[in-house]
Length: 67
Image (tube, rainbow, N blue to C red; front, side, top):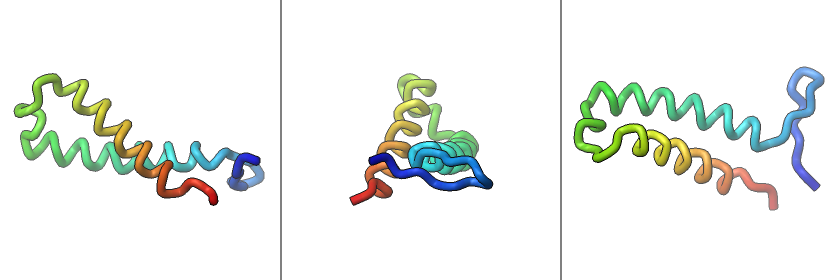
C-alpha cells in the first residue's frame, strides 16, 4: 500500500514530498557549485547537473522508504 501524506487536505504521495525536498537541496547545491566553479571541471555540465539531481532524489527516496 502506498504511503500518502496529508498536506492541507490534499493527500500527496510520499515521493512527491521527497521530490520537492530534493529540488530544494539541488537548487542550493547547484548555486554553491556554480559559484565555486566546479562545473568548469566537468566534461558536460548539463549531464553533471542531471546526474547530481538523480543521485540526490534516489538517495533521499531510499532513506525515506517505508518498512
